[in-house]
Length: 169
Image (cartoon, rainbow, N blue to C red):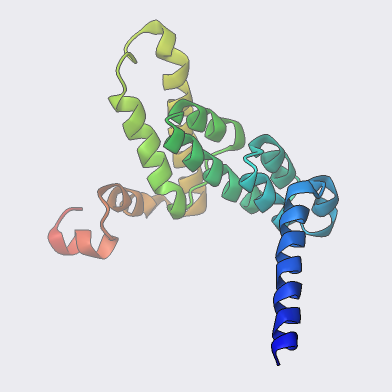
C-alpha cells in the first residue's frame, strides 16, 4: 500500500509541475485554436489585456464585454479610471445590470477627482458623456421606453418593487 501511495503522490506532483509549465511556456496562440475561453483566461492571468480583448472581439459581443468588464475593474483598482472610461467608449457600453456598479464607480471617480475643471480635461468629460449616452441608448434598445423605472431604482440601489412601496417613484 505504501508504494502505491508514493506512486500516486509522484504522479500528482508530476501533473502539477507539467500544468504549471504548460501555463507558463505554452504558446497561447496555439491554445486559442483549441479552447478560446481558456486562452482568454490565461491572457487575463498574465495581464495581456490587449491580446485578450483582440481575441475576445473575434468571438462575440457577450464574450468581449465579459473581458472588457474584467479589464475595466482592473483599471479602476489601479486608479486608471480614465482608461476604463476610454475602454467603454472604444468597445461600447452594454446595458448589463452586472456592469452598473462599474459605470457608477467610473462616474463617481471622475466627478470626485481634483483638477477636472479645466480645458485639458475636456476629452475625459467627453468620453464620460459618450459612455453615459451609449448606456442610455443601449438601455432604451434593450427594454421598453418605461424602463426608466429600472435604471432610476438601480441608481439608488433598490428594486422597483421597493421603490413603489416606499413612494420613491
